[in-house]
Image 1 (tube, rainbow, N blue to C red):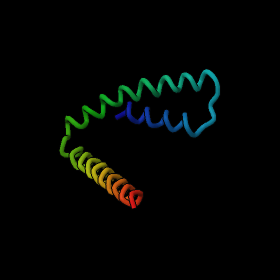
Image 2 (cartoon, helix red, strand yellow; image 1 turned 90 degrees about the vertical axis):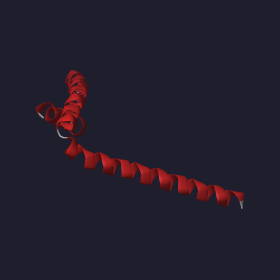
Image 3 (cartoon, one colour; image 1 turned 120 degrees about the vertical axis):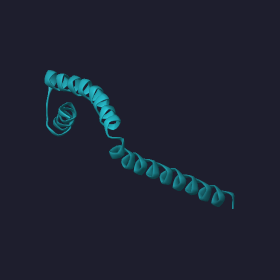
Image 4 (cartoon, one colour; image 1 turned 180 degrees about the vertical axis):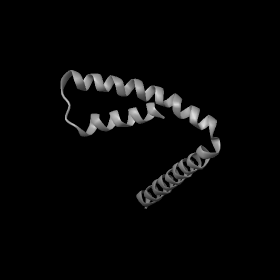
Length: 84
């Protein structure tokens, strides 16, 4: 969890504070490395506690399904109005 926290704090500092030159490049490299390693940490957390991740993944899936359904419905509506 410490690596994930380091990644989020570094990302916050990078975007919200004015940093210049070499320090900004160094911070960007740290963000990329810690972000890559945080992916493995998140996968380990999900493997250890799948009952915690399942509702979150289900909500993300439902959101994506609803968004695609609404987008498709909107495209069908605009296509039918164009043909009239």
